[in-house]
Amino acid sequence: MFNKLYQTLFKNLCPIAVSDKKDLKYSEKRRLGNLGEDIAEMFLVKSGYKIIGRNYLKKWGELDIIAKHNNEIVFCEVKSKVTRENSIGNNINVSRTVSRDGFTENDFNIKISREMDNDDNEFLPSENAHPQKLKRIYRAVQSYCAEKRVSDNQEWRIDVITVVIDFLKKEAIINHIENIVVD
Image 1 (tube, rainbow, N blue to C red):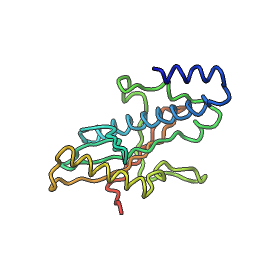
Image 2 (tube, rainbow, N blue to C red):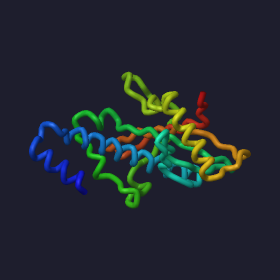
Image 3 (cartoon, rainbow, N blue to C red):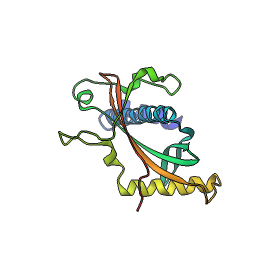
Image 4 (cartoon, rainbow, N blue to C red):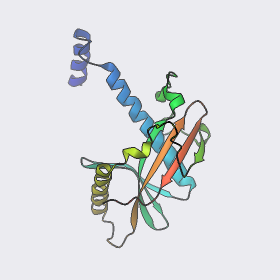
């Protein structure tokens, strides 16, 4: 409470020193990530997965979605982005979209893709699942298994799900990459 009051007073006294734009950009990025995770969760459920957890967070790593499929625990890293058409000059505000309670499958037409086009040297969300990130995920998996007392005989894997969202077309393109190997 005191911290919030202090920030408000500081912004009023010295508006140039505190960048609201940076805060807004981060919150939009987080909202986009949440939306991508909601869409990925819906995709997994429709594909026969049972969701057993979301956003398991430790200071050394986070697990976006934890699911069970065919007696195997699946730890999913979700990477999201908006299409180039949405990000250039259209002022798309993710805030207007979903709260977790209000999101339905009718909000987006979901398309499944095994490959992502990259004709314009456009950034792919899966590129954010780099080796250091995967090592942090692996450490979080180890923590989760220890904390939940998962049997050593339990099979598990790490998947990466990329979600490319097109707000203008109301589409989400999903690429599910199964069983990522962590070195």
